[in-house]
Image (cartoon, rainbow, N blue to C red):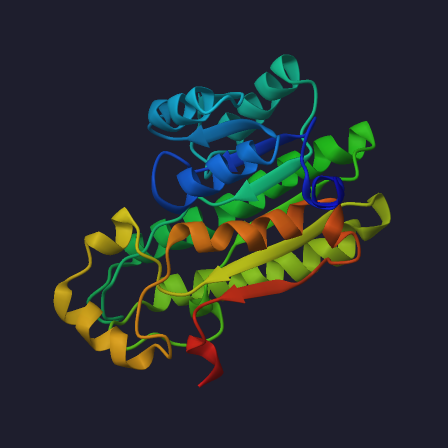
Length: 254
């Protein structure tokens, strides 16, 4: 069928980081339904996500690795090559956020956010990109950015998170230009406020402050990010690289 031809991922191996819950879990399920074999890399394991995918008829397994540690990432990639033989897709999703005023946040907290959100994505992209180049795979990498890389969220203060996501967007453009000659496409996804377990931990007064600022007056659902990801990693996006796709219910347009 036409849609399967341009959006289908049958025969592809997709690596998703931080897919134990939330956006990563939902995207992993979406990629599996499109036909991809899913490999999840996380620090604490993703047995539930693997179970959900396999019970739905898909193929998946998970590996333990900290994306901020190059040796652990390299070991995970080597294991994927042993078990799956290749990597066609990377969704660089692992990330954290600390809501703290700059004068209250410690340098250790700054480094933790930058290391996970920016350096971790760089380490993963480099390891997977190297493999794609060595094997001649015309692959796709999608880095998780955020609308926070384009605007400054209010009323919460999160300079480390905003800076890390702005860095991800420019890292994406840099890698896209660097690797275009190898046929590797690199794009980023910038969600707005999404209803996930992470956002469930946010104080209610912040959520009440956000809602009037959202043109749709609601948070997005993780499932509403799947179409953008499917587009970026599928043959449909063959001419799309270095692009940041914002899915924020119109937040950044006002």
